[in-house]
Image 1: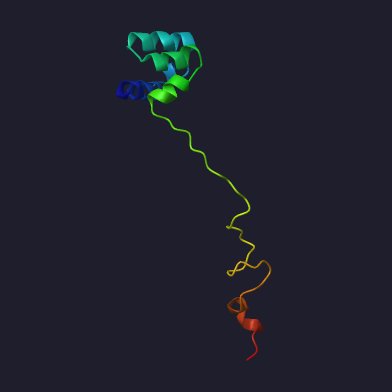
Image 2 (image 1 turned 135 degrees about the vertical axis):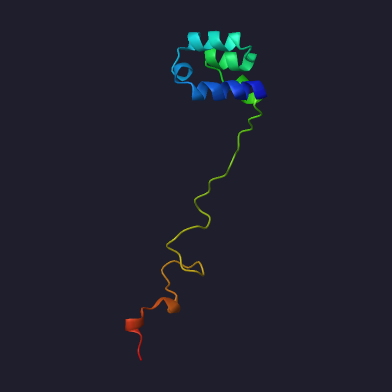
Length: 94
């Protein structure tokens, strides 16, 4: 796996490799003894083997918009209520 990461880093640093055609890049990677997963990603456009080689695990996060984090709520959670401490100084009786 470290060889694959090193090869990906080399591709990223080298503009000629980064902008090479799939055939040209596959030839360079074959000469560098790249893994089958990396070659499949380049030749066939299938990155699933490369993801598996690198240990990628997709994260599944529940994005529920109905739970907290709304800025229009007052500190106690009731919308529309103002905090008595938020009254401007010039409007206080005194």
